[in-house]
Amino acid sequence: MHVRVLGSSSSGNCTVLWDNGRAVLIDIGFSLRYISRHLRPIGLSFREVAGVVITHAHGDHVHPNTLSSILALGIPVFAPHPILDVLCEYFREARKARGTPRLRPIQSGHADVGPFSVDAWAVPHDAAGGCYAYTVSGECLTGVAKATVATDLGYVPEGLTAHCADSHVLVVESNHDPVMLESSRRPLWLKERIRTIGHLSNEKAGHFVRDVLTASRFLPDAVVLAHVSKECNTNARAVESMQRSLHEHGAGSVRVVETFRNAPNETVSFCL
Image (cartoon, rainbow, N blue to C red; front, side):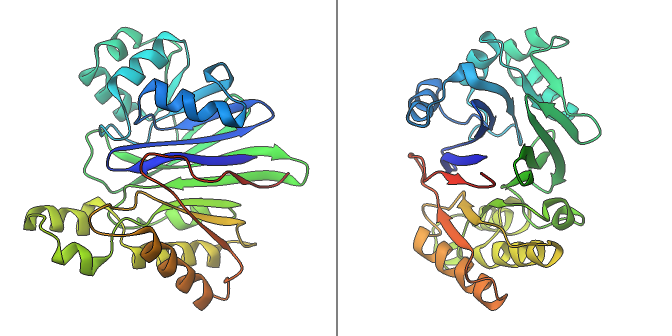
């Protein structure tokens, strides 16, 4: 299986996971042209996309025109019922697709998306309809390949650590450096929102990953750092903080991979 973050920030988010010529997209926060352009170098097009999974309805995760185009292409959109309800409230094309196979609710926290098994877990974030972390699993020669995508959470809720355990790749947000956040020109209400219900700091991301590793039977191949703030963080700070946390846990061999605002990161392949 392979995973690549096509871009991640408050300006847009999209992650692709694929195997054997079939793919699933987690969020569609960029234009259709942008996503298509960055699928081509890895040998994919929208014809190979078995479905789109939505974490929450904020604009940096759901681009309105892209959602309309995805539905017009007949690619099914998956999310828990509350998120689908919000999409139908916000977007006319989603309302037209209600009750059709193009909008598919994730019921009881699970859905099959093409050859992939997708499991959802609610996380705290100030988004209408809620917000979810996902694990995506698929069969491989050595058993089951599993990747976690967990971004946009103010804190780690009970149960999430166990949900993410035994992942071969962890895509987690490492949004801000607390000192940079405090010294930024952002208003006090926004700083408080980020700290409490918005996003994980570098340090909290490290604690989250260490807890996942403690609950796991093996070390992941890589930890991918997403949703890094442009104003209140740097990739270098996020990577250094995560590497320090992994080293303190005795997992310094785990690779830490950075992501970018408007460009794909490297492909992470696992369980080949």
